[in-house]
Image (cartoon, rainbow, N blue to C red; front, side):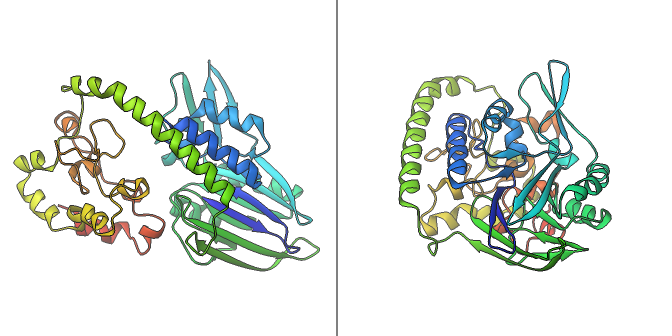
Length: 382
């Protein structure tokens, strides 16, 4: 998620709120290196780690050690070889337009449980509320403006800023919804500008000589055709995508026979097999939009667009999951296993419980406008 802060004399600080790394198995490292290099060229100053960065810890550590983009993480530590150390400095203070702005970053306890650390790595978190209560008063001694970069849920972030005085700005980076304007939560300016790189958010602060915010405004915009492409960057992206496609083809050719041989491994089985035992549940599902999700892509001609297809099929980019042109099983649409996990796991582990995080994988950003977990879950519950 991209955001920028602007002080009263039109100076900018371009920052990212985490989860920018690419998660693809084969080409994820190459794409992540390209994204980081591009962020450096664009002048990004600061970023906290998100879950995606923790999943690729060795690469992330290598990149942040290079600079010039600084990392901040206030309640996370990493254990390697029995030694525990902070992932990054707990706070950072940047001068933006003559104003000293202090940043701290928190990850929620639920969010850290979704990280998949590499072998030999363990992550530990300190309580976010206790950390904020300790850090904010200390940070205010060195900074005129205090900014929280949140990798917590929206509700947890809202609760924290209500309970911890002194946070001037809260930037929401974990499954953030798109909101056209920033708003106030208690005494804090709360900024949510979506995710997936489809939006840009600008927050302007007018600060008096004593360091008080006397006025503010925001402009959160969809990155659409109204924003002209940078020709050089577009060419670099095209070259990177071409290299990635070639690497994917080579990997696919190499593993084709291996996948065929893993007939007894955990895999997706498709909605037709689920129906055999769950006729009533299948009938209810068949009347929902989930059952017709792929048709919306075919109508728009976007069924091959990787930015779209993952939320309209089952098992996207997972072993035995949806693959274009495959029909055995047919994994088009948002089927049972998209929410309940692979069918071969069902008899031993039961189904995955449906939590809000399950839905927010897709129902977020532009596609999360008006989404309510409580009311919308009732439409698909069976």
